[in-house]
Image 1 (tube, one colour):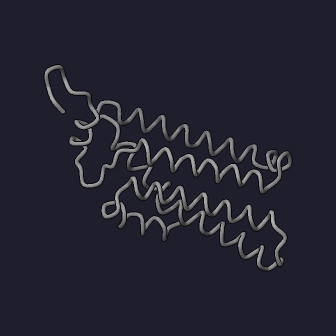
Image 2 (image 1 turned 60 degrees about the horizontal axis):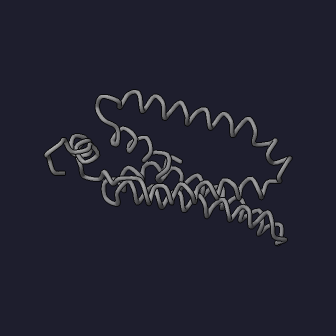
Length: 161
């Protein structure tokens, strides 16, 4: 986790936040599907365990590379100065509520659907997140907060963007 965050801090301004988010979500999806594969298909026990551990470590690394640190930076960058604190408070509240709900119901979901199906669901959410980032996230690399805010604000009547 720490290694991924250190790498991410160097890459954010070089590769861009949007690219890191997309790559992170795709890596997380791949990691989840690797775990699903290791669980769902009969392999040598050692190979299956190795794939599961590799998938878990890859998930942690790819999350730490983008989805973890970039969201904490891009959310305030995409918020106006007037609403930034409220948007951050709301987004982190939703984040922790979702963490709590996943932790609370994970074992129940595993009992109901099986580990493979639950991890496939997590992989699917990661793929949808990559699609969302690709289609809706604005790149903020190398731009000041004022420039970002101006580009996201509708032009006043008679002004051109």
